[in-house]
Amino acid sequence: MERMRLLKRLYLIALATGIWAGDAAAAELYVSPAGTGASCSPTSPCSFQTALSLAQSNGEDDVIYVAPGTYNVTETLTYETDDGDGGHKLVIVAQDPEHRPVLDGGGSVKIMRITTDTGRDGGDGGGDITISGLIFKDGEYFAMGAGLRVRTHDANVLVEKSEFEGNRCFQGIGGGAYLETVSGVVTVTGNRFSGNWGWDGAGGVYVAADSGSVTFTNNFLIGTG
Image (cartoon, rainbow, N blue to C red; front, side, top):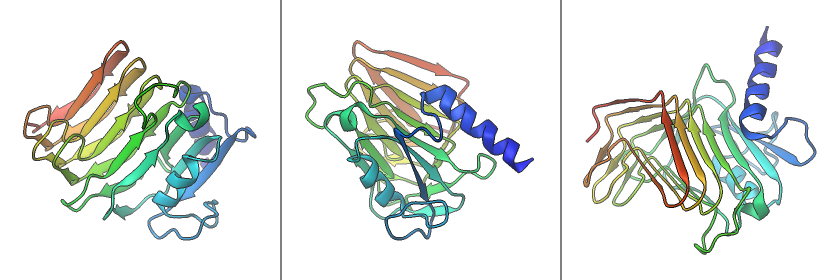
C-alpha cells in the first residue's frame, strides 16, 4: 500500500511538471528539519537551504522532497538564478502529502524567495517553478510576499495544495504569497490562505503577470486583509 501511494505521488508530480523520477536529467534532493551535510539523499537528508543552493547551480532539473515536521526559518530560504539555472525546472514538494511540512517564520522573516531572472532581462524560459503541499506560517516582511515570493520573466509558476497562515507584510502587499511573471503562466490551485495580512491589501495572495497569464482556481481564502 505504501509503495502504491509513493508511485501515485511520483506520477502526479511528473504529470504536472514533466520531470520523471529516475530520469538521469533530474536531481532528487531530500531535506528534513534536522538535515545536515550536502548529500541530500533519502538516508542522509540535508538542510532546506543546502538543497536550494545546490539546485540553483547544478544545471539540472531538480525535485526537492521536504520531509514532514516544522522548519524554523530564521533566515529567508532563497533560490536565485539569472537564467532559470540554464532553463531547468525546480519542484519543491512534500515528501508525504498526508503530513505537510511547516515552514515557520516565527513572525520575524520572509520565509522563501525564489527568483529565476535576477538580471530582469529574460532568458529563464524552461526554468519553471512548482511548490506543492507545503505550509507557510508566520512569515513577516516589510515588502511583498512574507510567506512566499516567486519572480520570473519567462518561466512558469505553479503553487498548489499548500497553506499560507498568519503571514504579514507591514509595508506591502501579498502577505501570504506574491507571485510575479512577465510572460510566463502562473497557476494557483487548491491552496488555503488564512489570517494573512498586507498593509496595502491583497493580504492572502497577489499575482502579477504582464504579457503572461494567470489561472486561479479552487483556492480558499479567509481572514485576509
